[in-house]
Length: 230
Image (cartoon, rainbow, N blue to C red; front, top):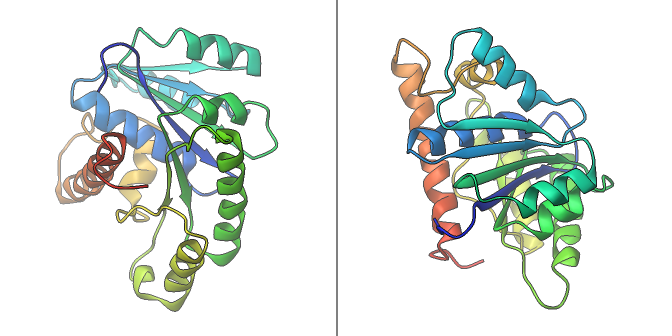
């Protein structure tokens, strides 16, 4: 990661219920466990990431290397992004194509991650967000982004619905991560409090969850390093 300024990853979704904040929390835990100083900027009106932070510390989790800061206005976000020198990584949690915060959250990003469920309706909404991201880049910059299929249950990745969702994204020439996140009770538990690297005991369910989020983080790092073409 660059030493001059924090790397910024914006986690964005056009709608709720796709696990955007859960993804942000999991990524924060992964990067923090690797020794990076992580700041989460919570721009979502529900402030779910901030609530997770408070619940975690009340439950005795240290959240080492992780800070969560609520952002209440677009101006506040712009000012905070300009000061991103106290951390190694900024994770910006933002929802919706209509909210004003999406502009600076995307325009300043080193990478935009778009979690979505593998349903046609959700994917079509993602395509609208991708068009928005491309427009924010203008003629002079292509903003790196990828779609990540999230909350994939059981053998869903072998179903026609899953394949149709992938096909829609590829037909739109959208960047799609190979890694997806499953619908795991362990992830749901972490979204309430703690991280995968602070929860005890470390049983098979926790290790399997770590393996999946580690694969996601590794693929994002490859995107940041330009190893995988956009």
